[in-house]
Length: 119
Length: 107
Image (cartoon, rainbow over all chains, first blue to last red; front, side, top):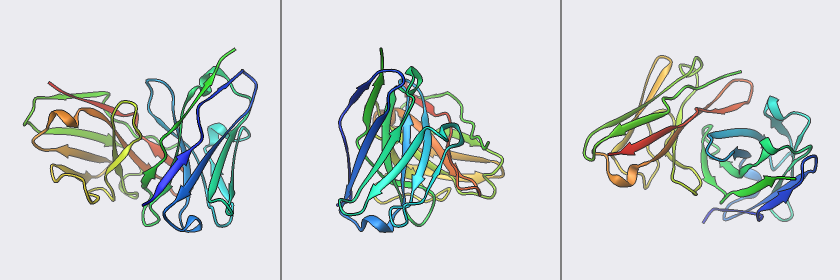
């Protein structure tokens, strides 16, 4: 069965960086694009960007350009999301989500990783 | 940038029909998708391609589209349907977007 398993919660200080991982299993890793979506406490879902696990190509939300980097390791079927220059506004649950491949929807989601930015 | 607009809240009594709308200028050209999210859980896809239901989603969930507005309809609402609902779409530049979310309250 398809599973996306994310790394554990993080606490970071303002100005620091965080790197969250998402390990995929149950399907051919390179056949499906993966996205990152975040959700601040009590707020809605925010799309962050997409990575093509086969080519490694990416496309990021304009708001996060310059601060976010998405990478992948095909040997371990893992994608990574690194966010730099953290502020309190980056405190959120971060999700990886698989693109269904047929349409623009997300058919499987990771369990979420809470990133807390606090001094 | 592309935006999707949803009402912040919808309330309905058990057994009634709930309708949640989502408006966006690009919706006539791009499919809409709907997710439900219960507290502390990841979102779950309930409608794709405007009006298709994934396997395992109850038949009481349906979707429709008219011009710049798509609608999620939940017929015979049950207490377990109380959740946040999000519409989502994508634009031609390779950007994905979510609506602001609608809290469905079952009275």
